[in-house]
Length: 465
Ligand SMILES: [Mg+2]
Ligand SMILES: [Zn+2]
Image (cartoon, rainbow, N blue to C red; front, side, top):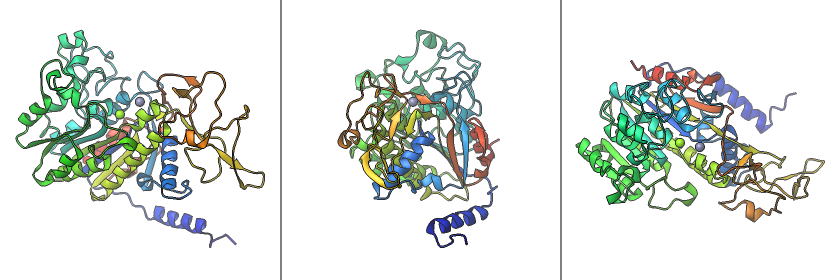
């Protein structure tokens, strides 16, 4: 007899019944929310899932993050036109324009040379946000990184270089030929009603040096934003954000840090969480009867990985999953397509045969020959313990002998997991990432997809002309 009374069996049967009841929604998507966990590869999702479960007192492996309950998933091929291992600019451009392009480029064709302005109009690829805005939808972009950073920039800007965030970053050639910086393009976005909601860090790129910013052209883009939209509001703290009245706000610029916002694990009360920004953005955008397009980026999962600090990455990943939960509580999934994906992966691993429920940030502790947990750290060939989490390359690489590790050291927030190849910054990974989808036309997200196909799914769901 099959073990039908086993809870694991019953859970599997319930999951099967739910899958058999799935029916594709072929209605028009009034709204689309695109969540991008920057650098949130599959191993990162697994580690966030376990971390999140363990933070609630469970073993963790059985946990499911908010977006892991979505009915449709795909693997996504992330390579750029000129790169086997991609960057955030090329990958987000693929998702936002429908064509893959080169590494380092914001919404411009691969036929162009990177970081050369030439003719600024040459190879400009219209973005999904531009098309959605032209069709009457409200536009929002929310990130924990600088608003001018590569991922959010693909919503509203076109630039041969992701580095041209403020005017002082432009090359002499770019200036001469009339290319403009990314911050200036956010303010100048002229499709539809312009960008309705923009929140994140990067304030210094919007202010002149005289006002504590980085700009050399004397322009105060925050003031320009207010002048551009009659009803515009600007906020710089979580308290100010909480105090706005969404019903009377149609344009909101929130700049909560000079550069990137804080890691979630180090965030003070002055900065809003990604979930809070997401809630406010939806409250404002949902007032548009034509619907909205919103990109929400968990921008610093990537930065924590580059620093080789897994604890910070997992905490930011958990906050990213919370932002998805916040969105799910606010939208009608009959008319809202939500896609959750990553732009690219990282060289981040979960390894070494730890027992079920072993603390994900801790030393790997294994099983005895009878399958019982030993409670003792597993040892490398050098006789020393190791952690479950690690990186192939990055600042955690060691010269010579490995140090003896203890639990307290490896579970500290700023601990750098060990790595093999020494690099100042840990690198992206080239394997596929996952995409999760729910809502109208979510069933088009499936199989192994080229990354630029995500654009076509969103455009089809919105019935963009
Ligand atoms: Mg990013
Ligand atoms: Zn990165």
